[in-house]
Image (tube, rainbow, N blue to C red; front, top):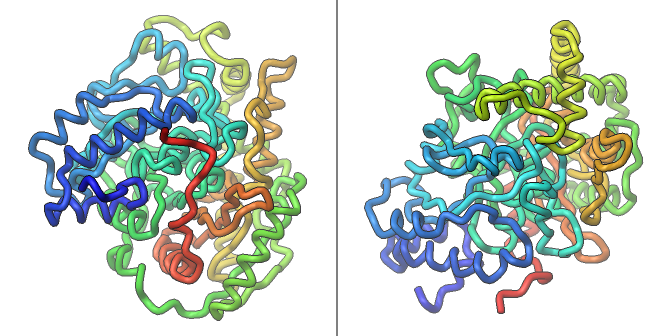
Length: 483
């Protein structure tokens, strides 16, 4: 073990070390803690260390799951383990050191997989923004360029995985929050289909199904193996995704039939795209053509009017923040006020409280109509849709400043950068960001692939083909040091 650089290994390889006796869980966990202590002061990804608990767990009996002994991090939002801190980027929850009263179903599945949790990662307040700069814990820095955003809302997890602290980490996605940090940090980020992964028992379907949870990873085999382990409904879920025809790991090495892939390089929200990310998408299109696939660039009426898409999305998010404020008020025993939260959060809470139930149901109805529109596109002969994941390279820290007279201006910038991600939360489709390209300055540029609802198998199949043809495993950030 002493001669093995575990920071260069994915989770599957680390689990194999344990299963063959080449390493113990305690050794892997100690290596992860050592790496965290060396690099985390530079990036501020791990904000709630659980090192002593992790050492104790790793030295004891662990479940015989597929990732037994592998160190892991939970995003400090969403899925939880009983007794662990849950602050959600909130000063108010941090002040009372709120703890999860019981496991979430996904948290329990992570534990049953044999993972050893070493800490919690940074997130923007309640996961609102596509950057990770909460007042409660400060900014997470991108390991590729310490002056830039690591993305959000799973930016802490993204930075930690990219920096080699753990091989993969928990993440969640309500508007791009898995795929955005995947793109910003040079990782694989799969947003599963709506209801593929249960949010039980804390939630049935967050904001009527906008949000899902999974991981950020380096390799497709880690993504497929973990998806096989955690997918499926729990009792009481309001609905479930159609189950796969076979295990997702079986998709990794199958022969890939030629696909017709629609390349989109025009913003879905009417905003400007960086020429650099457009060119990156076109390079990937050429790579796919070389692999035998057919690239088309139709003028697709994918999601209707761009302003309607944005406003209805904000209607659902604002309702979610108003509901969150009510829940937090129940926890702390008083009503949440403007002094308790960041300016953008309060603006969304106020908007959510002023909306009617009819407003909310209209927004959900519009998004369901969009889902039917894009389903018809796939039925018309398109296998997958491809886009740049983000509209630009990761922006400098401070770009999403909400301290001015109009806090919602931060959301306007978020609309531009996340033009290709939030739409597919609205439609519920699976989408994956792959670290296939880099900018002229060496920053990661993710490419997003979007499949029909429930067809994660197609994404895994094609992504694995691209991983073999254009390997990304050797790309690791150089802005951090471990001295």
